[in-house]
Image (cartoon, rainbow, N blue to C red; front, top):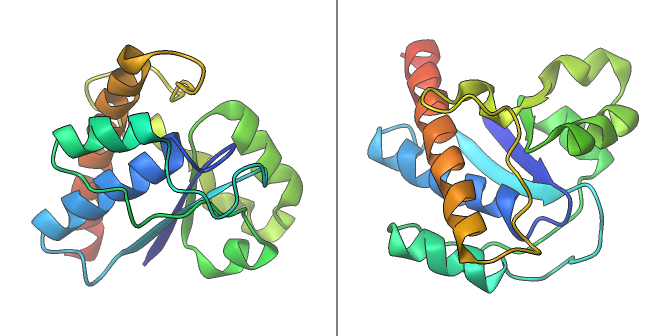
Length: 156
């Protein structure tokens, strides 16, 4: 199974989701069965590392984002990935505009898997301070746990 996480620039939210979900999958023994990646709906930061603040907050919780590099969603991604999760409605709409109609069933908001929080969008922390990055990580960790639990049930 292949899962893609998407936000606008692929330097804050989606690489954080990629790193957290990868770590949770490894811990659950599913690392070899589920491939995760991230991409942006815009090309503003192509080739860049995740935002330093995102890296610092994730590292403090044991998740390394340093090897991830920003890239833009490609037409092939809609074919190659089984699930494509947007961090918010704006990016979901951007994905829907690019995605062939017959593949739109793959698209969803990532926070549908959240179990403790009621939000359905991961807010963009880019223009805020450290507290915004902590909040993003709280939301992503919650949704990652729900997603991994769902995958354990599906994949056995």
